[in-house]
Image 1 (cartoon, rainbow, N blue to C red):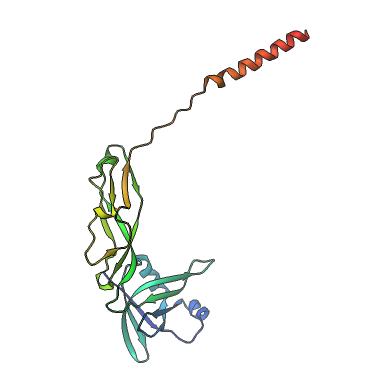
Image 2: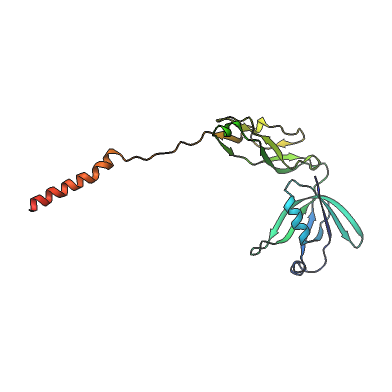
Length: 213
């Protein structure tokens, strides 16, 4: 589901002046489109970023002197201040219609595995998949049900349901998640050699002392 974000065409003020006014500078770009410099209220971009992922479409409304224009974009990159971690610039990417894009879609593991209930340990190995898809067919996450996993079993890429509109760009045999047997606790016991070291040393010492006497 797309998130809505209202912006305005960027004023001629330098970035530092905009930031002091709590306006974050940004740019909208993409193949076949003219670049548009925008400014966004800091509170609004922060709110959107709390909800948005790389795969979240953003419906951008840009107000200017000539009226409004609307664009469907994705957040491409975010620049943060080195000391304060505040947002100081945002890049929006406007895809070319009908052209596939590469995305990393997060995996959402759900359910409590049978093997975990039996004492096993769940290990999430891959948490996102690199895929190729048309922007209109993009989904925000892939749900993976782990409920039936027994101890020693795993789910691989080829085992999950992926929409036909998406092409996975990774090895289908890669393991996503597995349930491993619990590790046995190691008990360290002293060896026979270690036990005899001190008595032997004491014995040798006592013999030398007896000679001196």
